[in-house]
Image 1 (tube, helix red, strand yellow):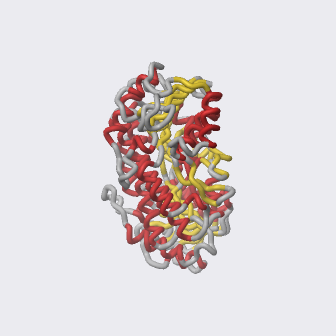
Image 2 (cartoon, helix red, strand yellow; image 1 turned 90 degrees about the vertical axis):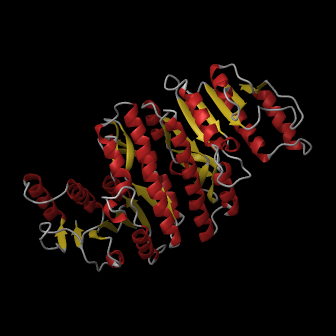
Image 3 (cartoon, one colour; image 1 turned 45 degrees about the horizontal axis):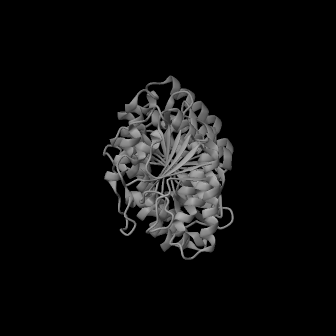
Length: 256
Length: 256
């Protein structure tokens, strides 16, 4: 089994509201179709310009406050369901039966960490040769009332449960760099080296790193222990996914 | 807590594909808003002209056959998710935070009967003053591979779990009739009388009863034991829902 995360910045131009790169998603689905169903897949996607602007507008991460935060919670979820439906349709066009599973229906969080999950539907879907599609979503949170459950957090949870052979993160850059911009692509890095890098990132304001990539790397350094290899590759470039699947990728490979 | 089932024939004119009665759904949401959040609600809706035509076209109830049934499974689910989103938007317009929970994500069936379910998200939603919206949907089925989990089956499962004070079925007729068309409205009926009526229906081809109403009555006769009263009322007529909620309804009341 291979877990694939399609980053929000791959699915959409994050500067444009409700922007959707249908051609990119269809190409990703096509690359998966080359290996499916012999290889099993679970896909998780981020919010891109669907979920993020709404989650910010309604301050979902501030927790449950008043009617407005409830309204925003519903509206953000509906945008994510819309995005997941579009992705499923792109997959169908490539004859891959991608089946959306609502993250907010199956996960309960505590400060954004999943503390209860129901994976029967994911398991039954895989058994029947579907590709489950989960997504970053709003969540009922035992500490904050409501929260966001990120696609990366879902990846960690799924890796722990399914122990996939491989985990692949599709991003809008070629992989991890020694510094960004301007540094060199890191072709291979061990879990302990990644951990060190993360500690440096903690202390340094000089390295240009978004909260997004730091959170992603924390997720990677956690889930790498439940798989043989994690790939960080460019999802916008044709064939990079296929190459990572066969094990001859261009990007960063993280090993336990 | 009150469980409300919005029948597919209330939501849409079943003879018109993808037909949606937004005004009717908004009016139902408005009637709920009169009592919410002091009263807790769970809403379940049927497939109407969204799910049914697709489920039939792709013969979902025949079980998992080939790629076409997988394709149909996804497409039918996407139509139901679209319908649930529209309903949630109508609820939001009436300031009721209706939150869709994907039935196929949280229920596994065996020949259409729910054998595994995850209700944490439903419970957490209610606790935070949301109105969970579940819906008739496709399901992964341990016997047939894939199946339909009907809104009525979900009602039975929820009633068993939540033991609501009241269960209300919104239909496109005023209630249960001694015969239909042409008979008299039955104002009150006991669980045992309903059981008798169902046995008669088994044996008689003379009484004009659709498979739909028979299945619904079987569901009612099962769930009536987990609540104080079940109402079968006309969801197309203004104020009928409000009247049933206060206990002074026009329609059929079924008591254990």
